[in-house]
Amino acid sequence: MLLSEPIHEDGVARLETETQIQVLPEASSEALARAIPGADAVIVRLVPVTAEVIAAGQRLRVIGRHGAGLDNVDLPAATARRIPVVYVPQANSISVAEHAIGMMVALSKHLLDLDQAVRTGQWQRRQVIVGMELEGKTLGVIGLGAIGRLVAEKCRAAFHMRVLGYDPYVTALPAGVERADTLAAVLKEADIITVHVPLAAETRGLIGRHQLAMCKPTACVVNTSRGEVVDTLALAEALRAGRLGGAAVDVFSVEPPPSDHPLFRLPKMCCWFCGASGPATSAIPKCSRSDRAPTTGA
Image (cartoon, rainbow, N blue to C red; front, side):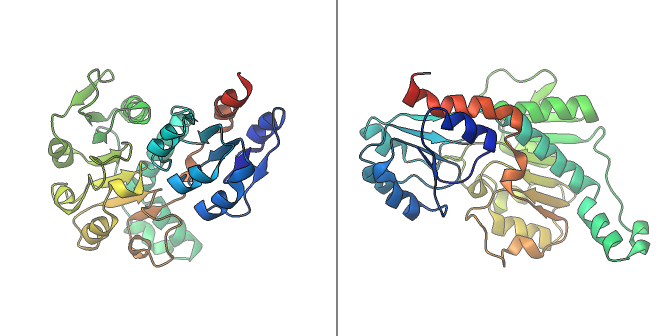
């Protein structure tokens, strides 16, 4: 079994009871294509499994995706070869939901600014850095799958926030969540907007210049879905012009992002690794069972 990137040691230990493990020396499609001819199975995190990679895997019996979403796997190519693609979409839902809420707190309380002010001896800045309370604010949740629902429920319980939810594919909303019939309705009313949609043709560029112009000038945008869902250039432009109160992302259209990425030079901006959100150790048994099942019959 090939691992395109390292995974938690507990997961590796479970898999090693069933098969031999090889971790690629570099996380890339090219390295995967070179190593895959001798593999029966592969587990990937962010590395694209292209049609070329799948064609090179003559012995390949299963593809495992370590994480939520399958947008980095060429599903038609796998289907043509009758290779099953497995994943556990809810394994890291709690971790990602907590991570998104942590971003909201970091933005609303200016935690990064406060940290830097203390580290650099700018004690006087305590008089000018003014945070915002989440209590009673309006949260806009775009996408009400497992993660979006958890964020909505936790924010209602912890901060007594009013929650507006937009998801045209979900019929039953969590208790206390108000349905928004349009994306615009969420953007215009929310104090914090958090995005939890899969990457697909209809969600690519879902939040762009036009949509950001609808937001309150004090609103904060959090994106933990996929980098291509939010137009980062438009986001940087809105922040630079003072048309947003802040933003936080842990995903980028190109990963790793270049060191001169436009978001990195902006205040009121949090940029983190998506790996910081999980999965937590509690999710490892579910992930490893899913990844080994097609090769062991478990």
